[in-house]
Length: 579
Image (cartoon, rainbow, N blue to C red; front, side):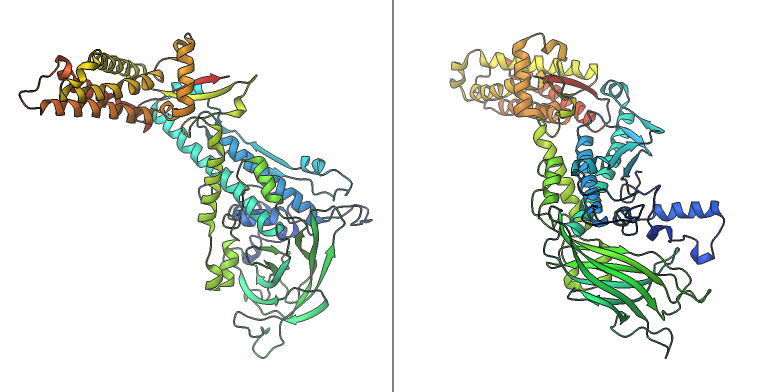
């Protein structure tokens, strides 16, 4: 659901993997009643970052491969293949949802509305099943409308300026949360499933799980370069490269594991996967002095050959033991063909998957902070990466609109029509705008009736130029103030308005029309000041003294339109259909 920190938070998790099930939120206080446990577990979920959510969401390394146990990799997909298909489909659908939010004609007030992400993990699908069928099992749905409303242009027009501003604010929060959720999904896929050159190094780090504080570092094993090895036992090293001991002078803590590369059948989107089997740890130091034990789990961090992709995966937590045994296999996928994410994102949103993607998808900041190497920490961060993502979403939507200020909504296409939106002020505001346009046109015609006289005197020449500029500006702004039912009665006016929407669509926004009125007023007043300062011998034509009051009226109209834009005055949204 939407939240303040990252724009969303995790509220529920059905079918949780063992790595999350074993994270007892009350483990530091010795447990508690079931009701208290549920509340504490929900709080723990809400505190998870977006990167942690997707890490656990696609964690299927302990899922049952087949209910009857007769599993064959040639007949069924492997867990890592299923995770790749699911995560790519979710990233593309969330990107499409982010684009759809930008096509909503008026801002919504969806408070507490949620997004559901789901896929079937009961058993692995057969390899002969078409990819499209597997993707259909992935679900991305918006739900939970208890405190939300469906705002329409008609309802929006009846709201006060403050109510419209409130809905715009809440809609900005909601769209930002969807953008961040889609970005986190795409980043998780990029760092985990987009490497075609393999993985350079793997770090196996043991932590003591703490529910109320940061996890305690125990030790680590670095596999560099990554290569196949049978089961072996390696001492744990601390942050300074020294061996970790159970106690002063005690035995050396060690980790037992094996590494193998499993090649997948032809036709798979993955070449294969490195399988790191975490067998056991022994002689761990005591981290929970209250109970004299340790709640250990293993975190595997992988770095690709170019060091531009990093991801982490965790094992289950083994509570209250200094000799934990896991027998869990964590997998590092290696892609068969590059560009799968780029193609999927571009299909969901034009230009979103354009290379390069690495500046937009930096690895999780927690991984970089644990590496602690200043040379590695340089580069794009979460803020810059998400800013690029949001910018690409806006840029991809913009070509479908007549202008960024107007919405060309393809989702509203019916029988070959599209809809544009035009901002209107209240009826008194439009009446003042009509008056200003009428006065400007009359004064312009008075100066333009005798164009040959413009060369008779310098004063007439300046006024003639101002009048020639004022006339098209007045006509353009007036076209967007007239009610649509009046425009549609006359084919020439309808075509003229369509041309202005295509080439000057900014005038559909009250802000742009306000600037146009301010420009008209400035021109009239500048002309009046120029003529007032003319020498006494110059002959001035009669209408020159009308420039000042008409200029002031235009300035006043411009201020009214700016007030509409900033929410001080109410806005009415009018729909214009195009063939």
